[in-house]
Structures are given as structure tokens and as C-alpha cells.
Length: 218
Image (cartoon, rainbow, N blue to C red):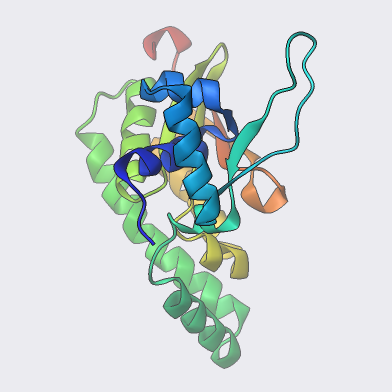
């Protein structure tokens, strides 16, 4: 069941920004609230979006927000999910957990090498390196974005194209963090502060400078 261009834009907005009001969506999309409401109503009938429970505000009317359903989130998933899960199950049965972990980290080294080459051709300042890393993750379907903090940066991944595989094999998440640390090297400390498997809506990493002076990175 296909979605219109405007509905795809709404889907993307709800995926990246989380639950939104019709007023905020209409402002972002430069459409009337009635038009956005019609899109959302149609998306609800197709099973892609639904309303959250009414939230009370200190002033004004209670606020109704719209969010993605499970089907809405699955709209972004990789088409090869089931094949990947079957392979993971087979490897676990035949070889066991250690073999699978080594396989994931072996593949991760190839990714690390690719990131290293890309970042070598980027401005060496840490903020430029982080921005380029987010661009690379975006190209891989992670919907990544960077936000500047007083003490560092937040690298947020609003979508995980390997969610189902990572849910069945935690080594993917271990390798991901190791990959980021290797890519940015000794100039940065990286900590995962939000994790979808701990109940968060998305995965977020806090990055702080180490040996590189903060003034050199901004």
C-alpha cells in the first residue's frame, strides 16, 4: 500500500523527531492543518500512524500527538531482514556464539577501514570528523544527525536498518561502538547514552574531545 509524497515526508518526520502535533507538522511541511490531518487520517487507516494518549498542558487545550506504529517503523527496515536472521540462526546452531562474534567483528574491521580512508580526506578537526561520520552513517540508512553540546557532541541515529539482526545478535552493537571509537581515534571518547534495546526511541552517542584542545574543534 503506497504512500503519497507528503505522507512519506510525514513518516520521515515522525521517525526522526518522534511524536508530533498536527500544528508542528503543518508548520514544518508548509501545509494547512486540515491537509495534514487528512494525510494522517489516511495513514492511520493504512496502519502507519496513530495518535498518542492526550497530553495535558499547563495552558490551552490538551495536546494530541501523532506517532508511528510498528508498521510505520517497519517501512524503513531493510528488505533482507529475514535472510539475515536465518543466517544468524544457522551460524549460531553450527558454530556457536564465539564464531558469530568473530565474524561480526571481522566484517566490522572492513567498515572501520572504509571510514578511516574517508575521514583521512576530511578536515582533521573533531567536529568535521564527526559530521563526516554522520554523513557516512546516513548513506547506510541510519538517519544520523549531529548536535553540538557545551561539552561535546551528540551523534544520533534515528533509524537502525539492521535492527532485527542486532536484536538477535548483540555483537552488532558492540562492533558499532568499537567502529566509531576506531574511526575517531584517541582524540575522542565515545559513550552510548541511548539504546533502542533499553527502551529508547533511537540510539545516541555522546562524543567528547580528549587530547585535542576544544578550541581547535569548533
